[in-house]
Length: 232
View 1 (cartoon, rainbow, N blue to C red):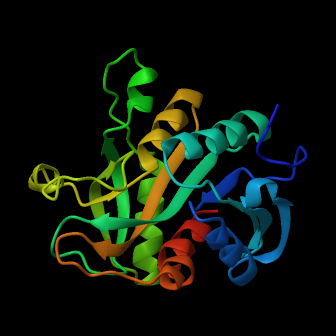
View 2 (cartoon, rainbow, N blue to C red):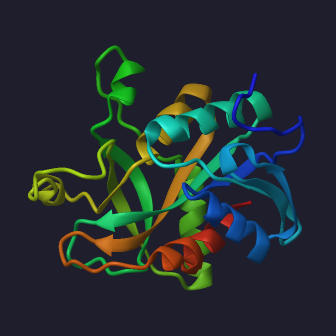
């Protein structure tokens, strides 16, 4: 039973984009897809299916955080047969050279969430993206002339924290940016034998203090959306 997605069998394509922000899902459907039809409005977490360059593709908001993304990923895979899940989200860079708008292809997702440990009895799991999707995304980005950076990111359960030096060790180990969903996405994809990838756009830089507006985060970071849609 699917408690959070009010769709019928066949309403959702095998390839789906997963923005955290449901308004970004709405923007993608209305501006980048053809003949998009809304299949879900439960909890205002919009989901649409339409076409991109003649190929059927869906987009579904997931909300913020790993518990929320886990709900939608579980239902999409087990209830609707989704095979390729591509997160399109924003992140906070922790490397000073990464500027607003930079597109990141996440090779893997480290993190601090206990959800990942619960799947493995307290052990750590190396949550990584699907290589075939990653390779194709890199090819698409090069063809479109979109510069990308590849590397490890960090998924956290805590957006606010009292430690101002929280990211220093992570940055020293080469982690590019922080967000809140990808580690669980990659882990669940591995669990259920499907493919997952995360494409992120830098919305702020924690080190340099650069920030973007909420409207820019919702509507302006179209490079990652174009890469993801081309994968369909």
